[in-house]
Length: 203
Image 1 (cartoon, rainbow, N blue to C red):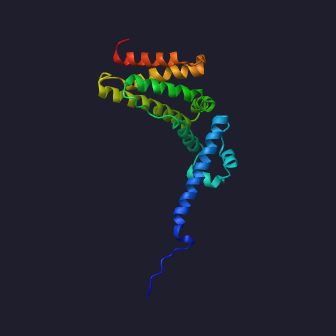
Image 2: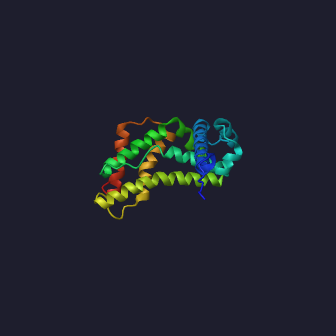
Image 3: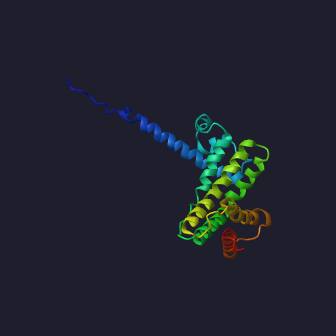
């Protein structure tokens, strides 16, 4: 007796469900990122994400059990907009990183997002954790640049990579949100050069 293989509409049901799930997630994250850039954390709500995305709240909560979880994923998407440089030299990598960071903090979206997360972190442990994760992500890129430079002999083996990250990130954040002076190539060069000199012990 011949065996009949199912070839009807239900044959690919599993893959169809996976594709629909991924489309829903992508749609929700796009709406969440757009809302976060527009309003910061203060104006962010799952209700508004559902309205903008057209995806039901029940579906959103299946993927992100809390508002904070959805904000964190949306922030991760913002951080993905720049990558770890690989120019072959410490100066080249660090300068590219600083330039990319400057571009990021100058975007209207991050100008609203990061300060609002810092503000929320003062009162909400979940946002405090989120803020720490964001900063660790930035510092990790600097640490990876430093580790490669140590391997090439451009930095001493005992280099404090956390301190190096602070000397790179600090001036950019200070200028963007405190002194509010304009960014230019001279600033990027100065941050890069001073950070390297400090790490090499030549300052």
